[in-house]
Amino acid sequence: MYELRSAVADLCGDVGGHVDGAVRAEVADVRQLIGEPLRVAVTGEPGAGTSTISAALRASLHDMTVIDSPGSVADAETCILVVGQPDGTPAPPLNPTNTIGVLSKIDLRAGSGLDPWPAAGRLATEQAGVLRRVVSDVIPVVGLLAVTVQAGRLTPADDAALHDLAALPQDERNVLLASDELFIGRACPVPRADRERLLQLLGRYGIGIGIARPIAGDLPQLLLQASGFARLLDTVDRTFQQCSDILKAAWAVSRLTDIATIHAQQYLSDAVERLVREPDAYRLRLFESARFAAAGVVEFPDPMVDELIRLAMFDDPRRILGLPDAGREELVAAALHASRPWHAVVAGGAQPAQNRIALVAYRAYTDLAARLHGHRA
Image 1 (tube, rainbow, N blue to C red):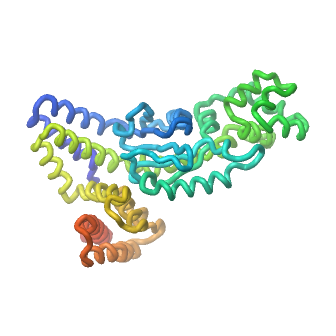
Image 2: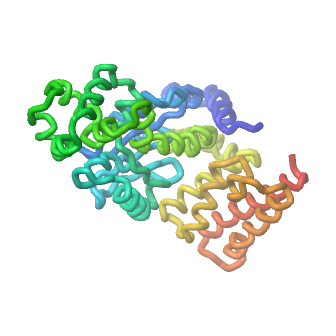
Image 3: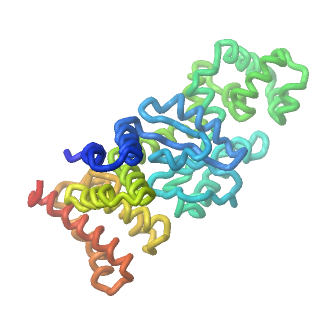
């Protein structure tokens, strides 16, 4: 299978002998980074829970590098935006093609004793709409529970303290869980230091889950399920890890283009242009088109933007066409059907930028149909 990142790495090696020392060093850095694990930058507003989400991801993602230092977004191929206030507006260059949103601290967004998930689901859906030009989705998470479980911070002593709290009368448990102050300060058989630690590790929402669990319940598994973090990990895998080739290659091409522009290096610029125009590198053109459309730089209806992103990100025809169980003939018909709206844009006298993107998408669908039909390997 043609690997885009390998093609870009080869370009870096070929160019090295034709550029001066400063440019050669920067191109070599790009080549090195292409071969390293995919990088995900975690960013967000102060107080949104960025550090907690970063810690949970570091404890969970063993095939990716998690970075959260200032300015890290430009150094990473992918990004997780931790959303704070509902009206918070992130800065560019975030884009739905490589950014997932996270709504953290959802346990603090509901009243005492209330299930936070109904409100969290509504808020996440609203934020996904508001940020549709920035993120591909917004996933609600209880970050504190996620990092506690994924980092293995719970001890047998913590488990014993939860069991002791569970043995208290229901009314007393309700009073303790009414506020942080009551949970720590109220007289209780469980030592204050143990309760303070539980509050730091789990929050009152997590403590309530630990107290209410079945006798034989697996506490870490229950807490992980209650955190919503498994959905985030699954989304990271499907959206980032499984698309690492295009994400790595697209980042590298963008970085090489910047180097060529900054240093007025025409040889490098021409080499990148030749690569992007190669037939086997068509997904790089699709990715660029998807970024422009997703950011609203070139206007298309949302369903067509979603199609562009799928065309750019995925190799599997079933994922591209949204037909997981389809056979080859159905996929061929679906690809040809999907090409028609894009052809209509091309034939309808659209603006030049729209026309260029529509032509890229149209050709991608017709090429997909041809490959499926066996006309191309």
